[in-house]
Length: 146
Image (spheres, rainbow, N blue to C red):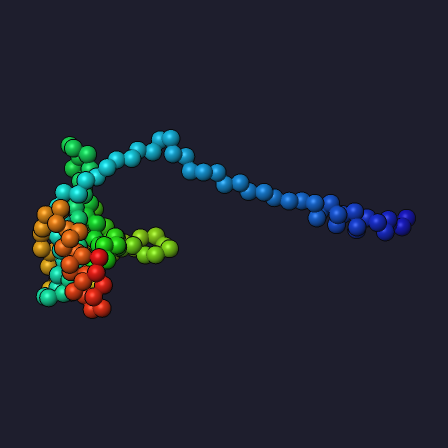
């Protein structure tokens, strides 16, 4: 008995018809809880005579003991965060945030900004932070102002 010469072509045509489709839906947001965390305190970060950035403390809802610190570079870009347990993360563009360690707020700020031990935090009113950081940016090399 001789095999049918069309059999390989038939198998090939059936195999080429197999397709796969993957559909990715939107993230479920019905159970999401959004809350506003107002800024409570603010600091400038300086190293001797240099302006390195700023830190803002945000607190959760009243009665909550959770709070966090956002660390910003001189151009007011959020580049890191320190949570209420002292855990420090630095933003890495196009990747997950990098965990840098645990310690005091000042240690976390120094890690995030890549500053030395001489970096210090100088507290000021939250309402004065924007004007002060714009003035400090104007003094940076190149005079990049607000």
